Image (cartoon, rainbow, N blue to C red; front, side, top):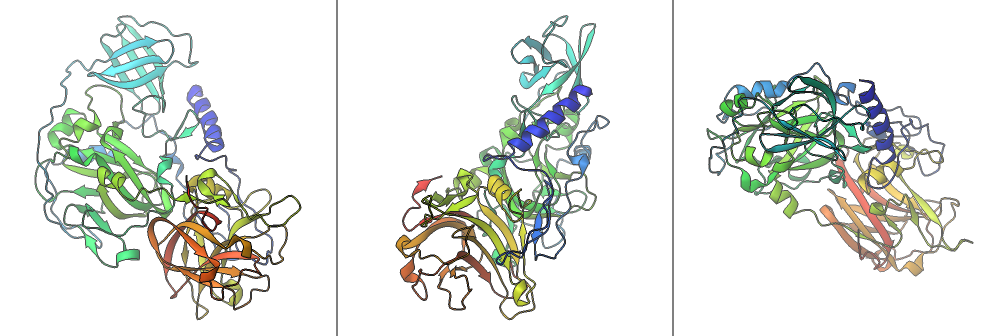
Length: 562
């Protein structure tokens, strides 16, 4: 166990140093910001906590952090609890789902029987590869590699490659018995497949699929969706004519016709959601096959995402059995005979899971994946934390910091909620970690009461070392890559925050889009007195919306593919 602890300690440190695609992130809590004239943001957040931004005197009302039991595996657990519950029936469930969801019509899919390899001996091949450790193959399926405690000084087992049995403790430890010898080995995770979905850190890389963190997955329900309900964009329009979603103790997706479904042509499944805890999604293969597999069902992790809607796309090949041993089945073979999808939430009895959309993997990757373009001033995918504004400072350019502002100073109660901690050693309002993780400035806002026209502003300074106004007319305008579920405005704010600050309207876009905004479209068309460039969200009290800003640049420069 000391070895496992060392793996966790080293890997957690390494994962914090390379947690996202862009750079490192500080795990310490954020201090209260200073009294900036433009910023009234406070609140702290730990590594997995969403930060709510209100005002300089507010305390944190962030969502609950991940329960520690969801981060580490338990050697006392032999089977996933939801897997134990999947033996009840191989038929679909046609009952009405709870909440806003209702029964739906049958899905169009052919049925097919998928035989599971029958291995009565329960034995697996364990062969020594001095470069990678011991390769484990059960039922012809390579599970991955095991290593000894030191990762070296390997030994050859008696009857190597024959009649070896595995006792998987589900905490990364596997007892291997070959002939008369029994050895305790450890899973070599991440670099070989399948890894144990219960393990969150290994080899310095988080198991969370960072590709899902590309700003909010703003959803407009479409007829092609398997299931969809998003009141932020389409009111009460629910497309539930293909599958039924249940929210009770048997949470999951059910077909309305009986039997199992051959879903090979789906390619996998994409789920858009918010959740304050991690979860596992299991492929329920029906009572007979579940029992044949010992309820060791193919599964994958759905990472917590308490603030921004996240789409998790999982191909059939990414579904892995959690326990190593025989009998074994590949995810792509399991897809030929699926009775339902079951969801098990980790570590919290009162989890807040909000399902927004379900669609096929092929549909999810065929659409809505156009990458935004990058301009010459700032690009989130390049891990830039400051906007280069090219004004007339001595060194040839100035930089501005991204930050958010609410209407508190005017008597309002609007809030901005960041999906990750904010602040660094130099600026308590810095959005560095959010940019690293989401490759954008992304978050959500709620318009409050107290004033006639509530608002929040997300923007950047022309010069973070000087609050004076600058003449940026020579830019001729800016280009912007963004995503937002409500219309908003761009405002060129002067240092005296004049009520006649030049403005231009920007339309909502559920997908990442890039536009040019020439100064001639401003009202009034004047860019000679600017201290801040703000993107302003306003509307009726109680409105909640999402935003993501991917890049800005001088007019016409957003042409680089990021």
